[in-house]
Image 1: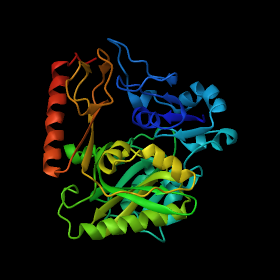
Image 2: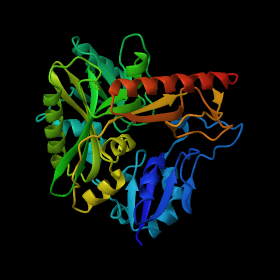
Image 3: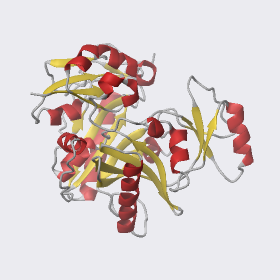
Image 4: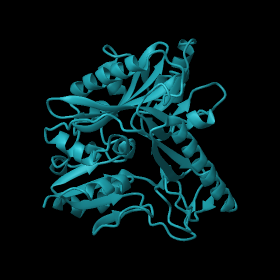
Length: 394
């Protein structure tokens, strides 16, 4: 039996799918929620304990730590699937050969190099490489009709993205940055499968950030709704069929241009000017479970088969599926919540800090309005439970 390693920030959803396949499974992750399957070959960095804080993810997470604890697994397994938080570029050449998925990601993960590769072929926000905040302010002053955001040149999940304005002071942390034209509009995304010779869009989704829920300037990823329809896009659009078709064509062109392999995602912003390409996520995406629920497929199996040359027949969506990440409204000690549509659950008694990911709601329904109401009701119940278990602020 071949040996397969899943490695990344959180392997829970992939583990559930992997355990249905004919592999000996290995897993290393940063998080280990209480609903993560327990397997023989498993290593976890964050050891959640009663009355102990889970800390601040941005301050504590480092991909090098996951690679370090995975050293013996990397040598032992036949295949490796990196998930969010780990880049194929992080692996040695010996181990990189074992990766199932897109391996050459330098022109994708480097957002400025990505911009230069696509700017003459696709609609994309104006983007500049910058070395300090003074340069950003100077560029901002030269384009009085545009608004800009600061982004790390590498990164995912919408972390450390800031709207540039005259009222806020910024400090450059370590690393490189881009200054990118801020395009207002609707966040949408394509999920696609790619083999060495072909590419096929699986499904398009409404991509959600904290900005969608709180009308703030926070762009951290908060979930998805799929498939993309007049209802699920949650905005007034003229021709959803045309939007879906354009997304499919564009995503498949990008897949060929960047030699994508396996399951990958393309993020867009849609407004009256058209469909702006924002970035490619060259790995299995956060829509993983939603796709499985809506299409009735094993997404990990589909990813592996695409990497080995076969793109599965993609069924039509059977229902809507909605994923919503709940970020903790306060500092609280987690107590059991009796709901059947919540996942990524903290260990009972562990402490989640304010604004850190608390848990994930995932649900499905053939009726979009019913689904939306179910998820909103669950959101209220989770937030009420968090308030009841609130701790004094440190």
